[in-house]
Length: 143
Image (cartoon, rainbow, N blue to C red):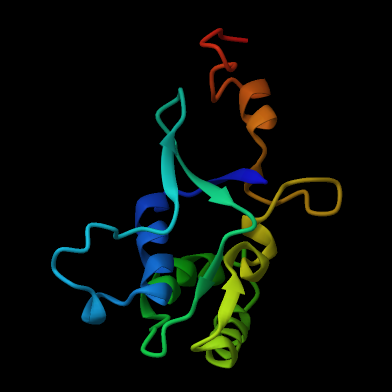
């Protein structure tokens, strides 16, 4: 499924997540890929990660969580993420180092789909985005 996740730092977040798969230190200079997900600009000019919820990546043996941690720490500082978020994520990445993980499955609830069970989630379906006037209706028509 495709979800859109609101993130002021959407581009940086996508790049930080890609670092788990291909750290900059091991990339070839000709490697043009630098981010894991696409970033979509909504009609109101806000940026959204366009997330494939089934995307599985290999966690590189030299992967560092530093870039992801730097982006998530403000959410911990302001109380939107629990204090233990970074430690739990670090343990999970360490456990999967050299193996595979479905990236979305490891996202904190804040970055998952907003629904009755997760009302503070920042994730939206394409239809939710259209209904909110953030994306055009397929075929170019505005809702």
